[in-house]
Image (cartoon, rainbow, N blue to C red; front, side):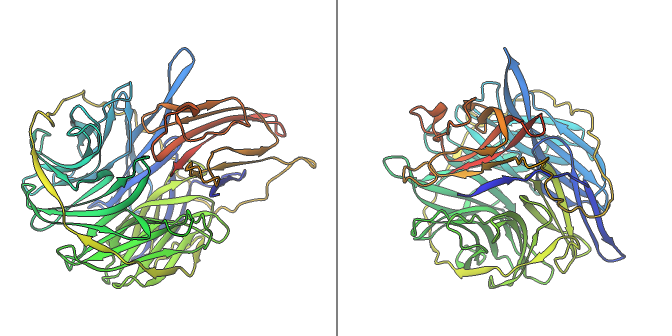
Amino acid sequence: MRVLKIILFAFLFSSYLIGQNSAQIRFIRSYNVYANAYGGSIEQTPDLGYITSGAYLDTVPTGFGDSTVIEIVSLIKTDSIGIAQWIKSYNLGANCAYGGAAIRTFDGGYIYTTTYTDSSGNNPDVFVFKTDALGNVTWSNSYGGIGREYSMSIVQAPDSGYAIVAYSNTHTLVRGDFYLVKINKVGSYQFGKRYDFNDYEDFPMFIQKTSSGYLMCGYSTNYDTATYITDARIYLVKTDWNGNPIWNKTYSNSDGYLTPYNFRETSQHEIIITGTKQDTLNSSYKTTLFFLKTDSVGNPMNSKEYWLSDSLYSYNVGYSIVQDYDSSYLICGSITDNNYRYVSALIKINSNGSPLYCNVFADTLNIMSTFINKAKDKGTILTGMDYYYGYLMNMKYDSAGKIGCADSLVNLKSATVNVTSSSNCNVNNIGSEIYRPVIIHSITPNNPIQCVSIDSVPHTDPPINHPGNNTYSITIPNVFTPNNDNVNDVWNISSRGYTGFTITIYNRWGEKVFITNDFSESWNGNFLNKEIKCSDGTYYYIVNCKNEILKKSENYRGFILLER
């Protein structure tokens, strides 16, 4: 079982400046925006600072002693060494599923795409808001039909408008398709296209701008009669500026499910994709980090998988990829090491996909890096989260892939993945009756939250202090697979020295799917443990309990991945 081990120790720093000279800057910064914050995207600004988009989870009361979890998005502007200049959070006034991402716009401001739902959590819509250079909102619009729409990727078009890629099931109300929605520079709807691969197109989806149009990437799934996934494949669509398809491809593997998390077009107009490959042949839940490279028209050139631990429950994921200045590729993600820890990894591979190095950030447990970009000094900037403390983290590496603190080079294992490709996309225009913009309200950002930024010595993990001979520990799984194979079929926690548990699990719309005060009760992956199965995906838990050794209440929060 893959688990998140909660180790109790003191946090001795929130920011560490590793080194600085005329050519290279290295730093680690954590931003205590709120609980369970994470970075969604990062890029360098003209003043050599950085803009980070992110999100954090907040628990809000709903009356009668009840509460729900909402996600609040944020922008963090820093200087060149990662010190925050301003931080803005944006409460949409209801639920926000998936943090989305922001990009810098031609006018020096920023535009953010995310997902909005009403207070009931029903009928989520794409939500876009534009800010000035200081993060102040200038306009906001939502786009959606009678079904569910999600978005986490946006680009600016040559006409200064914007193109959004989105998931929607408005057309069928059952299976989803993916959509291109074009808006002008003030958010007014211009046109939309629906692309159908005759599968269940699924979220997440991504868009990039090329010299001649848009390039979009996502994945689709097939289901058997019991609604279990039998296949998962990656798709690419290249269009002109009006969304008309030029070519399309799907990519599949006979012994694993392929899921993309990021892609880029290279300077040679090739396409590089990273994500995961889940083993389906060997009765294993092992997931490897996946890399695919195609030529300029989507024909596969090479594909690889990477992992470190041979455990059957090893989980390795590539969250983001970028081309380096020497035409090699850099991937950021998370891997399971040989100590069964979930650690952040910066991986460099050559143009053929062969590993050049893998540097894992081994300073603390459960660091996750989610987005990567290049800096003008030829270094690399990453954003992500500290899973243990719930802090958003930015990490700046030098051009050699070193951060100077807690560097740990490991020998990554790799293998070639056989990928087959085909073309089978249908396209339809969507009218304004489907994607009619609705202005919800003007977002008023909360007062900027002060960033905790203290330069200090690198922190270490001191031994756990157990008073007398008493010990306490708590183990909270972060993955389970309720597919009735009698292996890892339920989610439950184990502890020593704790009492008075209240355990609540929420889905991505803030709806409670499991709640109990009985420490021995497990979650079986169904809604309130009844007949209706919860869908595969990420869920959020809150565990309240009392530490009988320290005589105090404690609270743990985090994520659970449900995979059948």
